[in-house]
Structure formats: C-alpha cells, structure tokens
Image 1 (cartoon, rainbow, N blue to C red):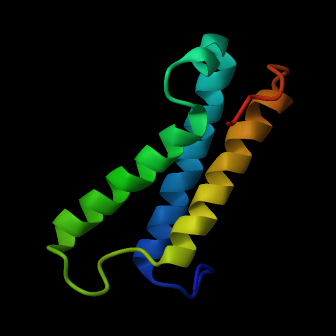
Image 2: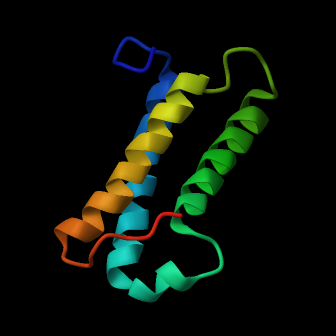
Length: 99
C-alpha cells in the first residue's frame, strides 16, 4: 500500500522520488542543453530508483521487508516523471522531450 498506512520504506521511496523529480525538473529549467545529453532525462529517474534499491538492499542485507514494493516503485517513477515535465512547463522552459 502506498498511502499513509503503507510500509515506511515505501513512504521514504515516494518522498525520495518527489525530490528526484523536482531536481530533474530544476536541471531542465536551469540547463536547457541537458536535453541534448547522451542519457535522456527519464533515465536519470530510473537510475535514481536503482540507487535507492541498491542502498535499501545493502542497508537491510537483503532481508525480507527491506525493499520497496513494486507498486511504490511504479508510483514513484510516475510522480517523478510528472514533476520532471510539469516544472519546466510552469517555468516557461517548454515541454521536455522525454523519449
């Protein structure tokens, strides 16, 4: 469950992905040339989820319940993508090419 009654690691992941989405959107506003980099912006978000998962796995030593649920990962990815697109649009930088 992703909402307030969910596991704490899921809530931490959602908060982390909100920060990642804001950071990605801010980079796209501050550095418009970032759209031309070799890695597309959505990959930055996938990499951030990977870093979170590796950290959670290492911290919990792979024990059950220490990893975020797949539904929380998917929800976090969507939230981060939406923020990454909405922030540049709101600040007048235009719609970023995601793919």
